[in-house]
Image (cartoon, rainbow, N blue to C red; front, side, top):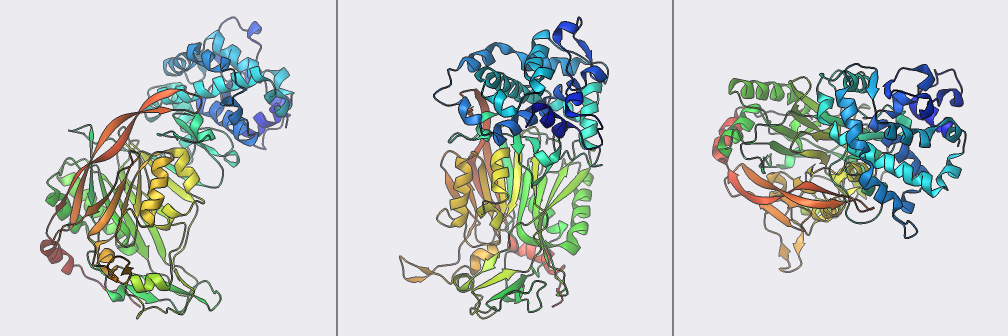
Length: 584
């Protein structure tokens, strides 16, 4: 492919009437006397796209990935001249200062050295050459890497300005990126065509192996196919800035037989060897119950995050719950924590599946509103004979089937990426933690500080599957992982035989599992008679290196302590008033 063709395909749509060569216009530096440039100059129109660092990063990431050249950068044949050049370039500092100091929406004053770098890579003469041929030139590849790294640094330098309206030029680009969403969720930080992937901020860099993810500290290139809902929250008033507090509510505390039932009229017809089942939490979870748990934690003003497991809240009750929590926080003048809870809904057996999703509540940094974002489950749960026996369900669901599939829709491929000034997290639902496609590559690219996995599962111990797959994420990209299940399910998980005692397992109190990059995996127990766990974490500083040897210090979350909170009798008084029955 000719470079000009790629530039046109990346930056403009089919409405552009000119040729690729017409589009790829970049003035020769010899024609410029004053580098206070008009980015709307039709005779220099490529500059408008190249001056936004996320655009240049996206363009080069696509080239590196498509032509598989990023390995050359760290190969033994590389003489490292390019890396020495990067340490003295200072392009990112000058570039970010130029963007921040711009006083109008269409003018920018750049250094002549930086402009010459752009010209060496994207001049009209280069635009006419095939990309494969350009990449055979080691000098061109070094310059491409230089701009890639400087784009990554510059993007990080202007990160906070993206949420402000004081800078006309930066606000112009952000306005274009967020114009299609009135909640200011930016689906990509770059203007490039989304058929070529998207760009988002990342937090951690893989410290093993070589991939495109390991060549950048701050930006992630995400291939097409997955929608990333990048949401930015208002940071809480952290009294203890090096700590992070999570309230784990492993509800429902009891899972009865009537929560499970066969679905004999599934929307999807399969071979008779397979069947479907439905799960319904018959115990309504209300905002009053959550408020009681918050008060019981003793850390009303310190909570950063509240998590409730998979399939906890009925979709019909979601609006009432959110409204009640908003009122509670407002009335007490408490800055709301992030709240993540599992949602379920009933199918009608006439072509409509049930729902299995999660809801993330957060205070929107753009609008100041307590907002919410929904994410569907991507993989259905499949019950087999062993699991039926483990959870004591054999008398309810047929063991004769090869598998019984959860009757829920699997929705669009979407991942929430939430960040504020202190934390970057991504939530997952059950099987999405275990399955590699389609979500795992996106999580690895984003490198969040924390992955929250909402489960409907048995004991959270490192020997079981959540521990195995959580450990993979702690190794690459280095995220900490918290998996959480309902206490009711851990209590049901007694049907399997313990190979050491040759007897059934005892009911478990292990409702959550913490895993981090230090190698620590720790089960979080709920004490008898309690309703939740307050988990205290701490941030530690750790060196992180890109594959080509560039270091940055990053924060990591590690375990500090936990304690059980509340009283199940008092919670029972609240829940008994709200008990409901879901129609069969």
